[in-house]
Amino acid sequence: MIRICTEFALSGLLPSVLKEHFKSICDKEARTLTLLLTYTHTSHFTPFISACCIDKLTSFESRPDAGHLSAAQHQKAESHTSIHATIKLIASTTIAIVNMTVFTLIIINKAGGLIYNRTFQEGGLNKLSTNDYLVLAGTFHGVHAITTRLNPLKQSLSSPPSRSSIPPSSTTTGATSSTVPSRPEPPSGLEVLESENFRMQCFQTMTGTKFLLFTDTTQANVDLTIRRIYDLYCDYVMKNPFYQLEMPVRCDMFDRKLLSYVREINNR
Amino acid sequence: MSSNRAARLGEEIWKTRIDKVSAELVTLTYGTIVAQLCKDFDNDYIEVNKQLDRMGYNIGLRLIEDFLAKSNTMKRCSNFRETAEMIAKVGFKIFLNITPMVTNWTNDNKQFSLVFEENPLADFVELPDDGRAQDELWFSNIFCGVLRGALEMVQMQVEAHFISDILRGNDTTEMRVSLIRYIDDELPPEDD
Amino acid sequence: MSYHFIILGTQDNPLFSYVLGTSKQGGDGQARFPPSAAHLNQFVLHSSLDIAEEVQWGTGHLYLKCIDKFFNNYISCFVTGSNTKFMLLHQPTQQGPGVTTRSSAAIGANPTSPQTEEAIRAFFQEVYESWVKTVMSPFYGLNKEIRSPVFRQKVAAAGRKYL
Image 1: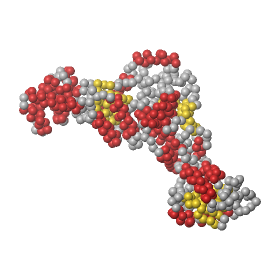
Image 2: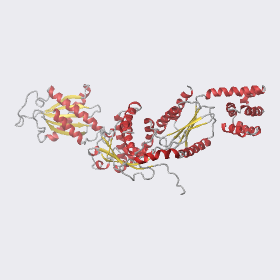
Image 3: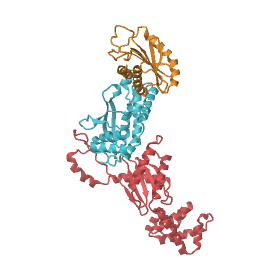
Image 4: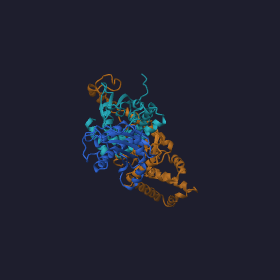
């Protein structure tokens, strides 16, 4: 959703095109509209989008089944500016909730498959379809793998001094005896990704499992939060004898512990 | 990580972050499992060894995450010697409160022995006196599997087996661990 | 004094049997039972079971002390919590040429003296501790014969130490 708005903003599409998009989105779920309003408001192209929203609300009014939008409908009866105020109101309340929040956790196994995804804060980030999450996981895995190879400079800087004492490990390991074959630290890949609305931190364990945590941009101590989630994962997923490794995580205990932990953070 | 630091780390984690259970509970549980396996496989001890190794392997695959989380390991060991120290002084320490001795390195630093002075799994145990168990059964063979599984998850392929056991009447309990290779991410072959 | 120690399982089935002689006061640790005693002892010990089963509910202790006497044979008994019985038959040596020094307080001279009682208690206690470890072995089954050589050694050691 954010992406859509951003795209529109950048490409400067005509309101009629937007309208089509809004229609398809809003027809699925009226709630989405509210969310949309929230996001559009927080960005700098508010007037442009809100105009479209008003347009959309008008069309909603004409629909007989749009009863649950009655508040907005009521507002519509008022002047143009009061709708703008409503949008502002919705936006500001949502922002108050959104502040300092852990939105979503995604766990990716070492093969790049999505094994867990959970959204904690309703209205924080838009829900994607399961398929999209799978694609996100796979794509991120690939991007992460590529970014680990994106550091030729560091490697070429660090290897010459060590070559004198330790044999290069890549191909000739063990060829020279009596010295300890060394194993260089693997380069780390993409760790943080930030957008206007969220911050995504990636923590990769030594075994290759990745934890992606989507938080509010102002969220502090994400490192600790992820470590704690990792602890929970060890205790309630890995130690569950019926959990099959590398398979999707379906462990009630983990869900419960995770939820209560994140709720604690979000309510702080 | 130096040997001393590993020992300190193990000690600290053992004291602060580990839930303790009765040693007898562990010993009896493990003993029962082995005895039951012997029964199930008609005292085919070679097969029992294999089963124990497999069970250990499955434990290792899971246990490694717990080990990494508890020890807060963020960097991987830079060589196999360091790995051995971590296994002995942190791994065995935090899970069993024992510190086997790392010794008998080969020249290429790819093989070492763990010598167990105490072995909580084998307390009270006396092998069956059918004349074969003493020669065929490695009672604590689950350790081999655990190491193999755990190290595989951190990209090390190893082979581990016992070469002596106090239970069999040897003077020491000794396990041999050899590094076969590092399983580094295999990149597709370049076109050149 | 000559001793015959047996352990009986919960079904009164024999699990362990060990014959020893006194080691105190210069004893050589050899039993001096008459040749016919080897199988007779078994009968004597088993015939005391009825008494043991009566006495065990009367005291709050595992050690039942000397519970029976059959001619020159004295039977002491110790019941574990799981109703396994340790029974010790002790037979003061008849006046013979082998025994020279004897004081009335010495263990062996007087099978019912407090000293003897204490010594047997200590013996039972030590055997009990080794027995617990032995039955903790995963390869040992309930009411199975105790074949552990280690246990046999420990019993022998306890015998040398206390009897």
